[in-house]
Image (cartoon, rainbow, N blue to C red):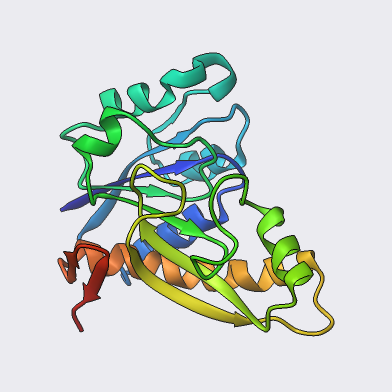
Length: 204
């Protein structure tokens, strides 16, 4: 059984997309061992509880710079993959070393556009609209020492309409995220991902 942990900070719709894909049988032989939030009161924790998934909270205001240490203590040698699904704390330290190429994140743009420090949530869509791009989307990538800088696993394009606001664009990108993130978990759980430097090959 392929075991994953999902790290969250907010509502958890990306988490829900993984839960649904597992329960519907799209992702096979995979279980969510833990859902971890870095924010008290995150609704994603309620989603986890509803589905009988163990949940933990290491509030970043209380744990300050030790959130990653707590996550490592909890997950080391217990899960195969860590999935960041709207997790706002920056990962660092030993967690990155112990889970090298076993942590993935979903970002609401086509990296390398509109990513890096300070680029998260609605800010990404505001910048895309401001810049006037015709195509945006989302990216699932491996997490490394940088911010949104790890090798790209999968991407999905979303057309930016002339009438779009950051809100409307965010909604359509989120719909794409809800397909792309479970797909990434699926191919990783099936051992269909090969990494060579910055290049990631998904075996069909």
